Length: 315
Length: 305
Image 1: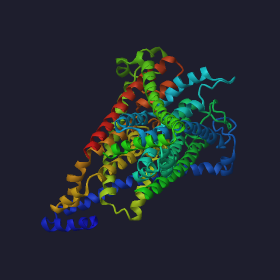
Image 2 (image 1 turned 60 degrees about the vertical axis):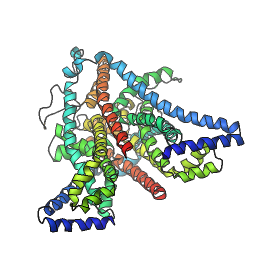
Image 3 (image 1 turned 90 degrees about the vertical axis):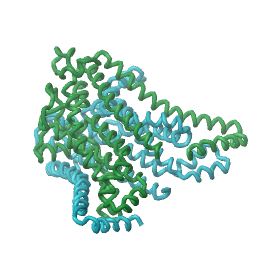
């Protein structure tokens, strides 16, 4: 019905004031399409910018060595290009971030969606949104100069955490992704139809039972999407891990109190320094960038699909 | 109204539930609720503690020196060093970013929401592409800037390169927010305009867009505040040096607040971290003010609807 009204009006305009209005409408559409194409051009640009040097890199380093090598030393005299140390550091930092962000984010979301009165919601939600507005360079600074000294003071073991370490970087990243996890999963829980809740209450369920056994399972694909999106944010986050996590990952380290470079920290560290353009070290930045792009792309696609499945069920 | 009935009803049912299995269940109920409240308490405490700590650490340097003087890598000038070039650089970059990304973003959203037939494959692909771009890590945009904007287009490590890259980075935010704002304008507004003989563009530009302004403004402010705080792409785009002059034109070298903060903390002297903290207070002041305006606008707008 909407489409038919849309189609009817240009003809009416034409008969009233021929010529003057129609060319404008036609050229407007061209401009709009051009604007929309910018995002396509951006994606193509990213693929070209990453692809060229990555192909150059893999002409000199075999794909098998890159994906299975356990030593990453592009800036050392003895060069090795096995990406696993960077991947391991990324996974450790991301894992720690999730341990912080999933409980805090989900707990906040359940409270906001199911418990909070409209008035307290109005105060609490902006607080979480403010946290999302804090620039990551600030989180990195706080992790390095406030969190790490505290950690070193209270660390029980013999080996104290290093000046830069994955544990503080992970904790700071966890705080950073709380708003992502909280807001996406709260949206999902708010979209669960009221009838489901009413039904459970009619069966004498308590509020906790309704929240944990009705709302959370009903919104589970949205919640999973929120967590997946959080993982993707953590993997792609750069400033926190560069400032507080470490800059060198020569071998695989799973100990979170040691300093290690994640994929993003490596890219940031090398590309902001003086490495000659076209050298193998320089190209390795793009190879790691391609891997990062593919990983986050897959996670985002998964998250988009989960959200869509959820919408199909309830909206 | 809906939410008030929602919150009223459960309290009645919980009481009945408690009457049936008193004690154990009641305890679990309270524990669960407390745990949830604890989550929000931790989140709020972290925010307050973060702000308080940064403010205390930077307090001694929070004066006119900060914006009147240039950054300096010389330890002898540590007392008088400031961040003027970074502040001016940030203002340059953000004005240019606004000028580039807002028109493109708003026009793209108008196309997708008002003109495009969403059943066609190419429009669906466009939409999916924007959703995916929104999740691409910011440092990848830095690599895009390095490989394409700085090298192929030959713009080098300049103010305009930084602005183009940040524009592309926050473009999805602008597009998604604008689309939501346009979608919220009732169809009847469009029908009324068509019924009076207006063309499509007249309807969009004179009826739909003005009605969507608060929503678009909210999205625009959030996008720009994100661009102000972004450091990772600029790290790749050669901004990590002590720049002691303000940019004069589009092709000048530059530095920006978040990058200047990073540069300060790579220095060993304690004074640099105090200076960084003072610069952070400045940066947080700008960013959080913009965020509050956006949240305020959105709440007002939602109330009216």
